[in-house]
Length: 146
Image (tube, rainbow, N blue to C red; front, side, top):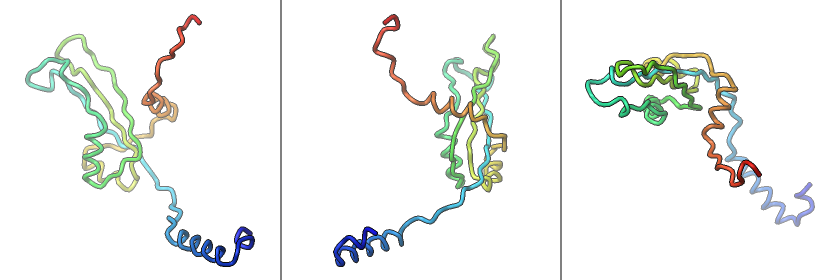
């Protein structure tokens, strides 16, 4: 419809452009089946020879994603849960964290070799709350009693 309203030379160029762009367009890819994998990390004073408990911090996503990436495992989504620990004394670990990654289902065997277990997906409300917690929300500039 648009091509008929243009002069013939312009329509030809426009048609050629559409054909060229169409030749390089990405094909529609079918959705890939994914699974969630998890690994527990425990640390603190009982896990090392010396050092104060406050010097220990749980691992983050970056180092673990890098390890999986070196094995050819692409991570689609990451999530973690901090699990409770007893901190009544300086003997127990001061953190226990479960790190979960969403990966292609075909990569779960490779992930198992890296020490990850296949687990059920976190609930959608958990994931939504986690994603919202990563967004910076500046404090309101209006006092509460206004």
